[in-house]
Amino acid sequence: ILDMGLEIFQWNGKDANRYEISKAFGITHSLHNDRGARGTITLMAEDPNNATFWGALGGQIDVTDAGEDDDAAAAAADAETKLFHVDGDDGHIKVTEVPKNADGHFTRDMLDSDDAFILDVGSKLYVWTGKTASKEEKRESMAHAQHFIADTGKPNNTQVERVVENGET
Image (cartoon, rainbow, N blue to C red; front, top):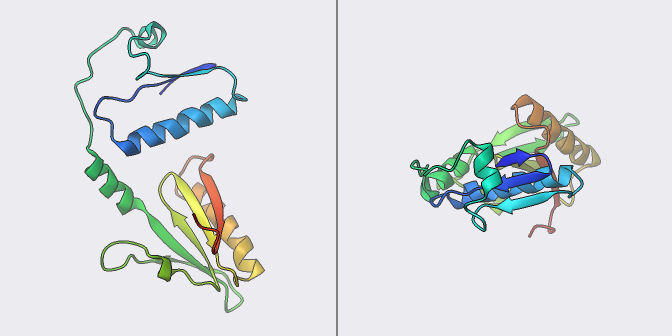
């Protein structure tokens, strides 16, 4: 991504994996929205010889490092995904990490309707609240998600999305 104020360029290498493209797309649109959706976004796939883009970088080059493949990126993304249980049944809120199942995944049955959970997928946090979770668990799960962003050094603009039980897509 090349950010030139009201001109934002997104270049995806010919071997860019879908995770890299998706992340770049999200950042590009976040930058654009931060500017009130003013200016332009240029996808370099549509204009690969854009003189403004290449001029800002000192001239057009041939890129030779393809980066990692989709399988390696998927494995890395899966490895960084974490699930935290927010439980306040005893009157005190406790947040504990939930281990993955034997296959190395999280499953729907790990969620408890009486509690809340925070799912960290790297670039975004989801706060899942069970339909019978207490008001304190619902409130504290969002607060803990915000603290988690700061404590782990994630960018301040990391998205936190609340998901209510049975409202999942």
